[in-house]
Image (tube, rainbow, N blue to C red; front, side, top):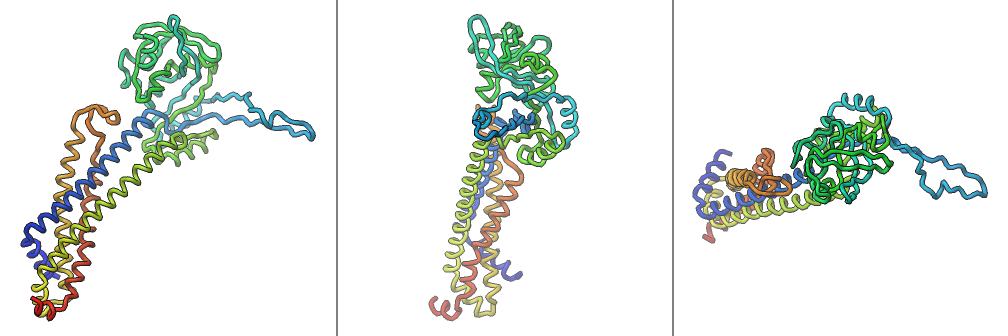
Length: 406
């Protein structure tokens, strides 16, 4: 074993340009591997932060009343064809429900919301809005309105309200202006603009009309009740278990963000599949590079191999020589690749710019330590496996034929 290692290391040192090119190929493959993995990870994280990070992960909703159909023979019952609209879809005992949710491990935010449709009137202009009554502190844990403010401050006390930048632009609103809000229930209130925010969603910027929870309940004609309770969890991808706990504790309808964002999940899954295919091709490149160099090396050193076998070197020892050589090439290339690739990605990740997915930075790329560890060991392992075929070929050479042929 020590003999094979020493000879393999000598071949590695004397390999010249072939070994250098092979190491460079492996390093390039590792760099591409790291770049693609970090870029897709950054894109996915950015997409999730944009679409899910500022919205509810698990939403608690009231149970829907179900119409009981009275079937009478020979009579057509309209209940079988018409929708049952006489339903009060509100949460009455929301205060106790919120208290129960606060006790559930894994939930990092709980916010009751009174929502409804309506219109806002400024001068002779009328725009359709979504009236959202929230508690300032709890609501900002779901969507950080304070951080999203472009003008003014978040102050929903009294008759204060906050609107999106698009709605403000369409109505020509500025901080301090007064508007008339009329809900679909016919309730009307005069509100004062205290802040104008910008969200990552244009629909939210154009339609969202935030008021205090009490004013939202008045406008939406649900005093003492709310439409839903929004929550967030630490890890959005493991919320299914917590959703089951919430459903069991409250007995209410529970809806996760995955159920609402099916298209987003399909897109993320397609991204992951594409990344896996690219990584597979990169590993094939690494294996081909190492194997081709070792095959050439075996052919060039065939006379030396014949002499070693004639001197008593075992088949196992000869196989070990070229296996070690392949491993040394793989480890060296992986080491260089993780160093260069990791440094390049860290540099790209810190470049200032105007990325829509990662605001303030040029590229939504993010390095993780596990990517470096994974790239290093996977590449080194693939290179070692790729060396087995040339090593086997060298070990099975007939020394008499090799020496005779020169």
